[in-house]
Image 1 (spheres, rainbow, N blue to C red):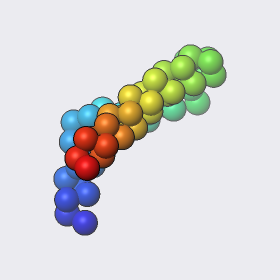
Image 2: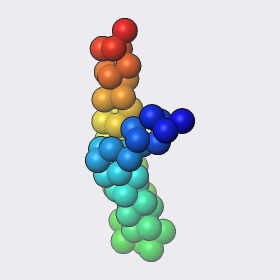
Image 3: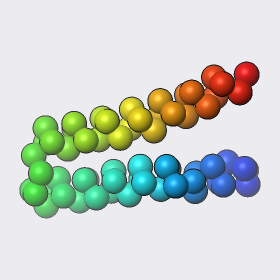
Image 4: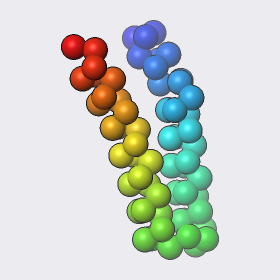
Length: 60
């Protein structure tokens, strides 16, 4: 459990979570369009999960 928490707090995870929150707030405030939000969100999430998947695949 402690190891999972430490992995969650790595810089990459923090950046991913902060960017997701910021763009969600901007979308709700009407500052960005739905298309812009989806584009940025997709790139961020794909990068995050892509690097997590590479880590898992490289360790075995």
